[in-house]
Length: 479
Image 1 (spheres, rainbow, N blue to C red):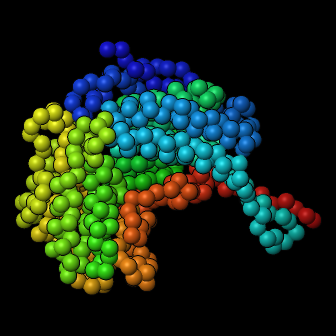
Image 2 (image 1 turned 90 degrees about the vertical axis):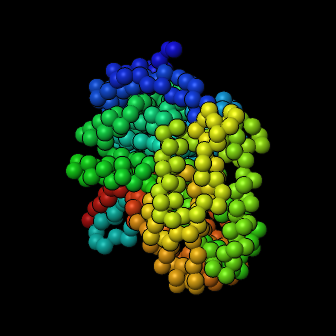
Image 3 (image 1 turned 135 degrees about the horizontal axis):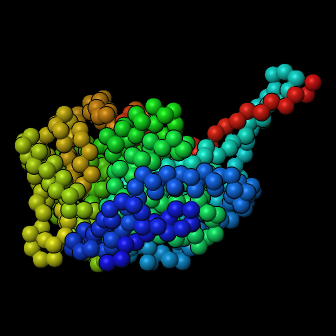
């Protein structure tokens, strides 16, 4: 099997590291042998990115000219959308239906930040003397972007688009579990006509990421992934005094009050945790239910989970495909066993499929646990799988105390027909995104990020571009 190269300075290279295999989690088959970077490759990518910042072909582009390139990338993503969707499906197991949506969202990210690029403004603060102050925004420089395996096409686009719109150069390091979409992003950047070194992609394992984070020529790190890794990155970046953007883990509460529309709450809570195999930082994994409706809700969600079809991701009738890797499937299994050891009752799921085609893949069914309190380990640690824990609450004060009793603060859902209560609870929950009578909706126009150990900074929206820029104050004397 030929080794798939990665991109440095608009040149495809196989790298000095040991090549690795990208596998299909639906059946364990090998998809590709991928080249791996070493420290010398990372250094070469940093050098290329720094040169790109000084290249007039990139440095001197007007905002509308950069926007044209971003629009072109969006067009190329749209034109190749079916191929990209199927590639991501094979690489990480998401259903084809979901992958098609995610590719469309990736293209939309480039179009949105093209518009932001064209309309972004500096500021004219009021003068306080015989001078006129002007605030301008300049690129932060070389950005090292490290992305996870759960939704590569969108999460990579959500870094590439604002970084480029702000005029930076970028070195993208995808997860070694799902490296193939990043290589397609590199191909599309070439086809769109970006100058050499503006977009570089280096594939490989954790040693590549560490080399990128620790390189003195990288001016900023943007990371999406687990909190433990994010903390290590922040520590190293702090030592080097470089800024970080960290979008990390979550243990999001999805809250159902007694006056909620039961059918909608059951469906919303079910999709909030089981869609995408629960492999989402915003998954509503802690479902808090008013104790007065506990039995009714539990039966409703159990029926929903039992009808949630697990199957091959290319089948149109499949609701959820395999988890992204066999190693991750094993990790989810371990958490469920931890729950059992803590006294959890498994209402449905809780065991990998043993028969037919599903036994060959990294499949794990929708699983519901009850009988625990919020202090249990599986209620406090991120499982990142299709595992819901249903927890009772008694009154609004009890609910808010339990919902906030976590180191995370990424997202939350509130289901109620009382708009006053919805507002009170939404303001009281310490999380970066709150959904009311819906869940897992997103918009590239709105800032996204977390409180507490769910991260630092905000992606998407106007803030998502400004994060990759440095403000500069210029005082023009009028004396």
